[in-house]
Every structure is written in structure tokens, then in C-alpha cells.
Length: 286
Image (tube, rainbow, N blue to C red; front, side, top):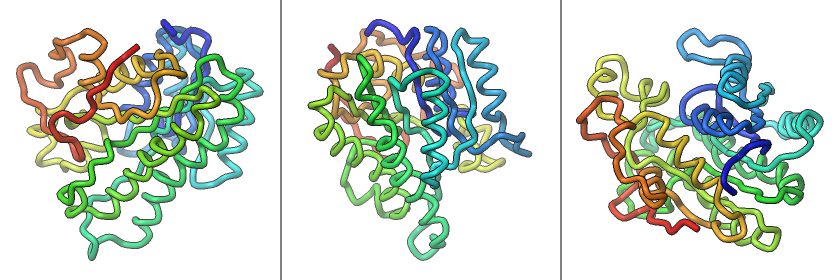
């Protein structure tokens, strides 16, 4: 695969941030994009809806629709996939981007927060993938991409927020298992994770207003994730599967070594993200 022209991507939670940048990069090739997310009305503090995202993707060169979908509910996922098939005739790529985050210790994690993270991150990724697989089997170069980290089992990544780590690692375990399960069908299943903090609304909320300016000056732009995802999704699905990719390593493997354009602030040193140690995410592209 050299580009994504005419391909149909089903992307969860992509009204803004990383998911939207993955969608926009594909739209530049003329891809069809389905934004399956909950935000159909303007949020008081967060930018973007499924409708504004779809319009921006059309302006970028693709075709796009927004489908209001809460991936915790099977009937809504089924309906969104059915509408995708009716609109675009198939699904070539499934991107599991939707995620919930709560960085609390065990005693401070309310069970409703635990349930939310596991229902969206792990269960949602499993269910959306499961629902898309029958259609992906019909594609020439089918991919599932999960926005999950490398399965780094060091205790330091569990100690501060056990519930969140478990929920995110669940997404990567879907990659680990499904990549082997679906090899005979030629469906690639890979994960992608940022090595550094990314300038998104979620990061702004985590940092808080007092730290946002300083913290965001040490982030990379979400475009780095869009470009890394594009590289993965244009690989041969029969050869490139089961990888726990990291954004900068993926781009460097493609031959691009200067990543300065992705800095949110010129000459800043980006803050390291969770779950990634030196050497994680090294891959070989085909």
C-alpha cells in the first residue's frame, strides 16, 4: 500500500486530538472516514463534534461522516458499523482510539471510574474490533490499530495508577492476541503509542490550568501520531502485524530522522509519556 485513497477507516473517539489527526492524515489521500464518537453537540470546554470533525476531514480531501456512538454499548457499535457499510460499502481499517483516563491510586479510584476505563479501553477495543472483523476480511489490506502502549510489565508503570494501566494494557493485549488469531485472514493488528506527551485536550486536563503553559511547551504535536499511524496503515497487512509501535521510532524507521517539526514549542525537550522505556517500539518496515 502506497496510500489510503478510497479506503474506509472506522475510527472511535476521533472528534479531536490524536484520533482526529490520524483521520486527517488519511483524508489527505482521499480516504473515507467514519468518526464514531459520543460528542454530537458542542462541549462547554472541549473542541469539536462528530459533525465539525467530518466537515474538516472533507475539507482535507476525504469523505467523512460522524455517527454518534458510545462504544460501551453493543447495539450502538453494531448500528455504527452497519451505517458505515451502507454508506461506504466496507471497512478497510479499524482504529481503536477512544479511551478514558483516571490517574488515581487504588484507594482513590472510584469503581465507577474503574468500570468506565475498562468498558471503554479494553472492552470497547475488543468489541469494536470484533464487530469490524467480518468486514475487514473482505478488504485487500485490512488493519486494526489500537492506541495502546507497549506491554511493559515493570512495576513502576502500575504503582501510581493500577486501574488505568490495566485498562490501557488491555488494549495492547488485544493487539497481542488478535494479531496471531487473524494472521490467517491477512488482517494486521498493531498498537501505537507516543514516546512523549502530546499536546491534546486530555493532557491539558491532566496538567491543569496552572501547569498547562509550562507542560504543553514540552509536548509534541498530535500530528506525529497521525503520521506514524499512516506509516503503519500503509504497510502490507500480511507482513506487518503484532507490533507495539512507538511514534518517533516508527517515523525514524520510515527514513525521516529530523522530528523538530513536531515540537509544540521550538527547541523544547518533550516530556516522556507513560509506559515507554528507551528502546521500546523499535520496528522494521517493509
